[in-house]
Length: 360
Image: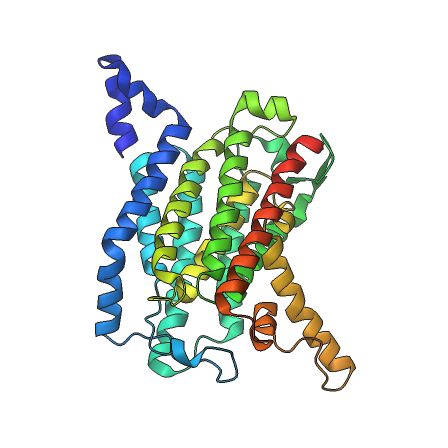
């Protein structure tokens, strides 16, 4: 909104020409989201506490879970609201990419909110099948939009491969199922990592930052040509959306760091993962999520390996507990140390992911 109000003034006042640049607006979006988080975060915490909307104890054998039973949940409301407000203020609203990304973000947030609400009020969340069905429906909507995207029909069903240039993987009629897999996978993987104070949101901030850089590169004709990557007109505006998420995530982390004053719950975890997955689809960097979100992949793989090992050994466990961050908690490592070490691993994956742009 501010972009459409302020940029037209550049004809009279040259300083307003700054708002033409995505980097400037992305910076303002991140800062706006961060400031709004600081302002409204304490108010939300007091509101949720007053109405006793606490996380509750999911499983008694999870380390440190009992002490989190009186921590308010559904903090994702803060992340969603300030991210959406900041995006609407600073982005070019004429780009459809923004509206579809916001749709995915909000729809998954509502799904997560419904699940959190049922856990609080009924002691049990939504059935996994129902949750997956809604995620699939949202993924189909996003996939259908890209499949019939008129801007660049030649690459609408393609995705970029790692470490090679100008070679794409085309899914043709299977593209929509592929998009569904990406969005369902990203939204659920971020949810799995939401088990220690600050862990998931810190990693999400790192991945969102990586994809903000990628979106800017893919949406800039000169940079994309220099890096020899696919140029997608209009995708640069996703940088504003992603930096708004970065700002909102950092603002939320202020209150979520150990000992947490608030937990984002499924409201935030499902929405944030799905939003990043949606942006990855738009800029054709879906496979790169494996590297950029490497820690999330490790969390998911640890669960899969645990299940396989448990079944094949008739009850034995490969890890003390999964996802793997709980394994380290069980060994007695302090929660704060586990979280920071996982963040460091996330930064390493981020750097490797960005490096692939040049070494392809």
